[in-house]
Length: 96
Image (cartoon, rainbow, N blue to C red; front, side, top):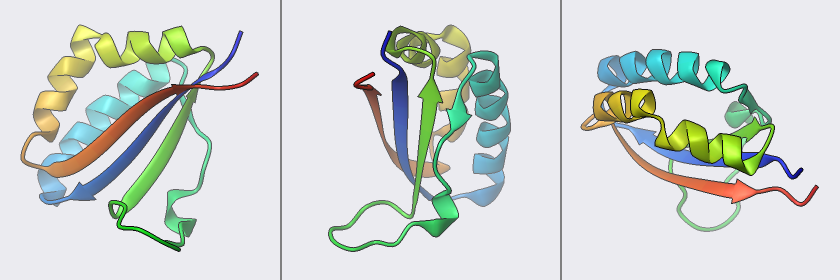
């Protein structure tokens, strides 16, 4: 079964509010078995205009990634992010 990935690109606009979101979302990500597979602080922008921070989370399956994203608990967490960050989020299936 192919793994699933959540790619998040975020520019934080309110650090205090975002910290609250990050705590809640981080706890949920752990519950869904996600793990960070890159070191966001090492990103070197070579072309284009991505957001300030890129994080890639790996899930055991694409279905598990979708389950996390669609969870009512994550909907509540996303509400905490409103006004705290500008972000782009992609769910994508791995090849293996």
